[in-house]
Image (tube, rainbow over all chains, first blue to last red; front, side, top):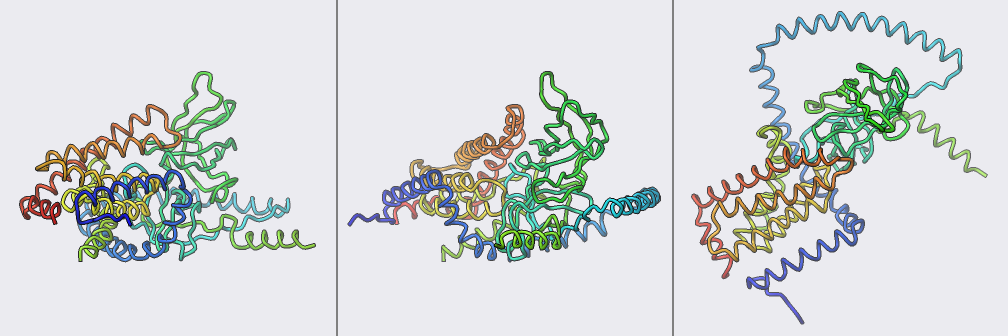
Length: 293
Length: 167
């Protein structure tokens, strides 16, 4: 029988090269099978790594809290004055929006529109950033055991943060809206034109595929369209700061300033069901009714 | 004992890479600690151990990254394997040689990763190579050379390597 003597340098070299070649071949020839094999181990390994990860993250959070509370207090007075002005302005806007909301409610009842259910969400904490520099993503302290799955949308009360792309038992990876691999269906709030929101390698955000005849302009707000993906309609994505119309192009592209500063986000909400619990139940009942003979 | 040491190293590497290193990043670029550790282990303990530890590091770190699994496994495992082969072929591996080797490996891995990005135009790809891949490769190379230099000051690395080669 042919055997490799691992203790001999030549045996170890042969085995190492053979193993590397085998892994390369398995990854390229049978990508889904090899991925599936490793997925079995993701859960237990994820739970094992979760312990040191959460310990270090909580230590890190503690140090940064102390730093923010006691050391960086210099600009607090100016900040307070600015925030008081903001509150005054927001109170005014709030009154105006209440008026609009009650008018909308009246019209909705009048037209018998189906009320949009609130999405079901779970809160999570950011405990780390992507292990590489090539992707813009953050790690959350909740995973599959908390009901989080890939493709779920992630938001803060201000707006969209990104999309879950990977989960282990106790953690999940969120690809930020500023990453070039991310694509979210967006809608210009004023003109109702749709497009695709994606990140750029420089960490900015752009809205692509805006129709050439669209009257889009700087300062227009972009929200989620709710047509595809894990986001309900109307969540803020960003504000348009520049429009590019290339000669001979079929569409326009706009640059956006994201609503959320994704580099500083600490707590997020993961959207488990964009249409809410009631809508999901309703959908299930509908499909059950349809499948009945 | 060695297995437990490697296991501890891999488990500790994740929080250090994902939680602590972003605080010490320069211009938003942090070094790939997994690549450096796999290369140093390959150099000291041989190609087989370097490969196995590199594969484990690549796989576990990939659980906490949005990147592709194959790239992470191939880059980190390859770093351990090639450092081990280099250690056997070169009579004396100095920090400078490791620096050049890591620079090449990190650049190669980074360029492949950037070219595998979807939706990126040529100018954006070039921007990523200039602003992310190249600085990170320099960072990795300097860190690897620093780690090896520190180990040479503290331990008899040459003896460890020779022991590994003839035991």
